[in-house]
Length: 595
Ligand SMILES: *[C@@H]1O[C@H](CO)[C@@H](O)[C@H](O)[C@H]1NC(C)=O
Ligand SMILES: *[C@@H]1O[C@H](CO)[C@@H](O)[C@H](O)[C@H]1NC(C)=O
Ligand SMILES: *[C@@H]1O[C@H](CO)[C@@H](O)[C@H](O)[C@H]1NC(C)=O
Ligand SMILES: *[C@@H]1O[C@H](CO)[C@@H](O)[C@H](O)[C@H]1NC(C)=O
Ligand SMILES: [Cu+2]
Image (cartoon, rainbow, N blue to C red; front, side):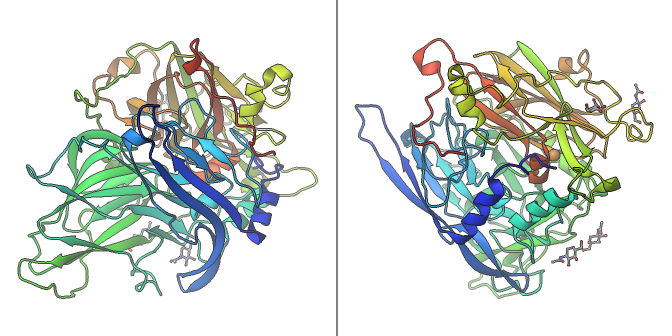
């Protein structure tokens, strides 16, 4: 699949296995001159530790030996210009004007063992929950953590559950995936070598634990304590590599208030569906009256499989929500109840869509909607899983004796290896852009066919072949951009979680079948579309997003299923500089790592 097959990433990872890499992860707020500056320091030491899950011990890559990694907290007001050092990509942050902590070979080369690196991240308006994770190979599986962004001092959440009641914080809930026997780096190497799909994970996890429905797992099961009568803010992140997940809490309905660190119109939900990369903030009212004397409830995460022809593990991760005080005194330890009625079945596409369709921006005076009413440029981008022939000297064993690949508009992205796209672009006047990338990413699918027709491949009209290349799209500064992501049925339709770095975007429309450029835009929601950074495109359908290209830098666009990403379902948006000095891309730091 090769997108990164011939880069030094593998070598870097192997050396990481042997060497603890020191990462200073300092978050320093550089406030405007008149204000006192507040500095938070987070030191990230990337190291391997040995852990036991599913009755098996294995070594994993962690930050500070913690899995999940440390939580970073800050307030909106004090985060004007944090300085971040490290190999760990601070991803999903809307870094302004780059260069920021970003994917390897796109905006930086991987940081070498023993080295550290300073990033400058300028945030804008996020409030809520984001997360950081490694952006090298599959390291994200265990190198990730939560970023909590509190409302600025003096302001508060734009929601409450009961009038005048304080909202308490629950520990964040990170959903993940676990492979019992395999190192994730070996899984990546294997899929590159064989061209086959990545072996499915053996379990989903909640805060790093599969939960007590799995063997040898009851001791570690995450327990979250609540007091009856209080209302809690639950922050949920899907850090998984391959699975969308349904999440529900037995006996409790959630009130969704934000996604991807942007407030939503609050709505009550028995379940949520979180795609890899997404976050959900929801209120939980600790006041269950339905089960008398019951004080332990499962929080459960189950894979949502939009394409059941792809292998997956049919199991449910759990944590326990435990009341520490009930009205009648000390709780008795009955077994937790399971959200049988509310956790959707794994193939319940309707339940996934019903949840996603309810997301709306808050659209209030304090949190207004600023969606471009007209667009300067529309891109229609097909997402396809493809097949490529095996290399002559390296036989492979993917479907039909070929190797799996993936593409956007039939361009299967290849990471550059000698220098990252960002420096190639920034220093292009000295000629280094030549040979690193081509600015010819197609605006529309190069061939038009009945994209979502399941019979499209057997008809023989469309092959599964694709073409590899480092093809990027250059956007004019300030242009209003629309991107329509269109699923295709070439090797089977699936819901792809599409993620755009550097921007939050408004999700203005979605639908099943083929996007109709003449008819569908008339039905867009331009009043209160949700503002997100990762969107789950409906299986066999399309999603339209809008944003203003006012953030000059180099931004990766990719499917957040990591295997699709390494197979090439990516591109890069380069946003040109504006006229004023503060509308220009920042100079890459002198000490950027070398490839
Ligand atoms: C996950 O599924 C595979 C089959 O695909 C099975 O071999 C494995 O035991 C399962 N893992 C667990 C923990 O149930
Ligand atoms: C998944 O497991 C549940 C029981 O835990 C079973 O009812 C269901 O049929 C299984 N689904 C698939 C697709 O294997
Ligand atoms: C495209 O395929 C779908 C599904 O098979 C079918 O219902 C539809 O009629 C096709 N559209 C065209 C224009 O052929
Ligand atoms: C994609 O590109 C390959 C290689 O050029 C070509 O064979 C194939 O027909 C193209 N597919 C589509 C759907 O455009
Ligand atoms: Cu995908």
